[in-house]
Amino acid sequence: MKRRTLLSLPAAALAAGADGLPPVTNPRATSGDHIEPAWKEMLTITVGQKSGDIVGSNERAIQAAVDSVARWGGGTVKILPGTYRFRNAVFLQSNIRLIGSGLDSTIIKEPSIKSALAADSDWYDQEITLANPAGFQIGDGICLRAKNPHDNGNTVIKRTLVARNGNRFKLDRALRENTWLPGSPTAATLFPLFSGENIKNIRIEDLAFDGNKANNEELDGNYAGCIFLQDCHTIQIRRVTARNYRGDGISWQICHDVVVENCHSHDNTGLGLHPGSGSQRPLMRNNKLVANDQGLFFCWGVKYGLAERNTIEDNRRYGISIGHRDTDNIVRDNDIRRSGEVGILFRKERGFAYNAHRNRIENNRIADVTKAGGVGIDIQGQTGQIQIRTNEIRHTADPSTRVGVRIGPEAGEVTLAANKIEGFSEAVQDMRKKSA
Image (cartoon, rainbow, N blue to C red; front, side, top):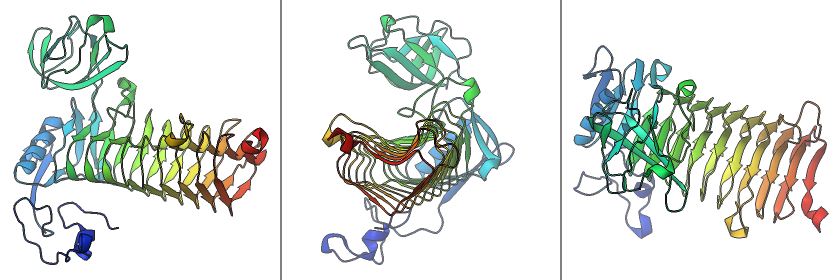
């Protein structure tokens, strides 16, 4: 199946009509129809620090360009060379292409500041009161965090400060959660650099994002990253650098048909790439995922994805992690080197129906798990119907207690075929036999 490209015809629908309908061979722009001609020219707005249609060096300039292009039905925002410093996210809109000049167009997150809340706010309120408002400004993106007063769970709310009287700040939207003082609520200027929710047909290309992790608090990939997307579809991210975020490099949650190609996600404290819960058909190809906590993390219910020809190196825990209902994915032709604990991990989930079944691991090169007791491929839980074929799994130093492939005692059917496993204290450790 061919993938859709931004602002052009859905190729698969045109080549052969869906459900027996005749193919669309000469489309016209028709009100309400998502099938259009592949327009050769659309509106382009440039943003630069000294020249351009919009002149500026922060998120407000880029946001103005995004909103202008969206107002005219879509087009391109071109971010000219320079360093752009953000106090809030750029909130993306549908049918937009954002392009830069590679590492010459760099977006940096400003240092985070934090304050406790000084008064209760109820779920219907649209304001907060800060104990120490020093450094907070109108327009700042903030993250509110607290213990839920009803069940003691974690409450996380992302908002923007839009008005102020002293230490009282109005928010862009109501809280919709209670932030009461017994839950120790705080506000911090934490946000993704590019953020998209409920949008479609986006391309992000040739940009560099720097999360400035030395001067920022952690915000995990369920809420942020250099790029964070929620409930989106038909997204293309190419030749992007996502680095130094105190959280994830690139994270997308419940997003479908996301393509990430030729990107470099490195030195983030969280995950290099995070295809998040419920995401269908992610394609991750030719990326470099280096020195993150984990390189590539399949979250919950990620299905029919392909990860191929990626270089995944020096990640502190796992090269690739697959778990909760992540089924029917293909991981092939990747170089996974010097993972801290496991090259490819199948996580242990709560029961058979929750495990990562019917995944194929093919033609990968997994080398040199660094910690003693490390494993090349570790299949935990009741994971089954796994194909592990024609991989090279090697350890070139002291084998210690390292294992090439470990199959846990609860695992189901695992097919091992034509793999080269060398340099381990134990090539294949099948714990199912030991527990029989």
